Amino acid sequence: QVQLVESGGGLVQPGGSLRLSCAASGSIFSINAMGWYRQAPGKQRELVAAVTNGGRTDYADSVAGRFTISRDNAKNTVCLQMNSLKPEDTAVYYCMLGIYFSSGYRPVNWGQGTQVTVSS
Image 1 (cartoon, helix red, strand yellow):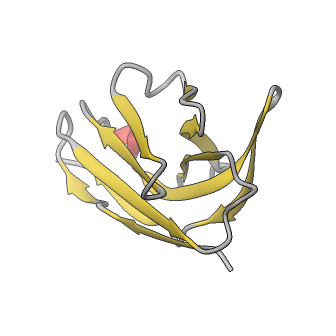
Image 2 (image 1 turned 90 degrees about the vertical axis):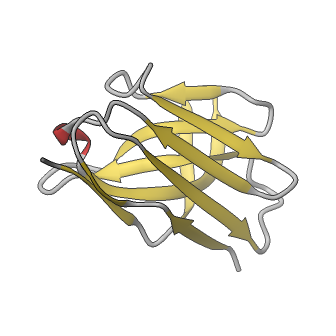
Image 3 (image 1 turned 135 degrees about the horizontal axis):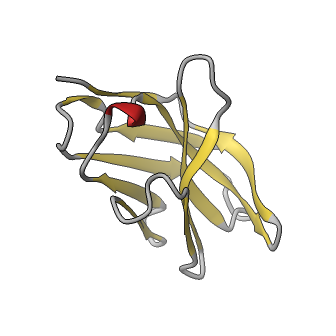
């Protein structure tokens, strides 16, 4: 059974920074990607950033240049450094374990979610 443990959410002012972390454990041998999705109230869950075992990274257009995803394959951890945060970044952020295909990412496991609120 796969377990994902997230940390690092919270309240931050516009322009501030937060760092999210996620540690995976369990049977993850078939997984080749980790990343973060987010879901704001009334909106669909969307990909924020993801990284494959081979180091490929993908970002949503709305966060490119502000967010940076990093991964430690040996420790099965993934982090999301979020800078220059905007109110529209407010959402519940979910860690994801999944599979990368040429057509995109297919999530297989989810974390419990961590709230990020950007407000003055």
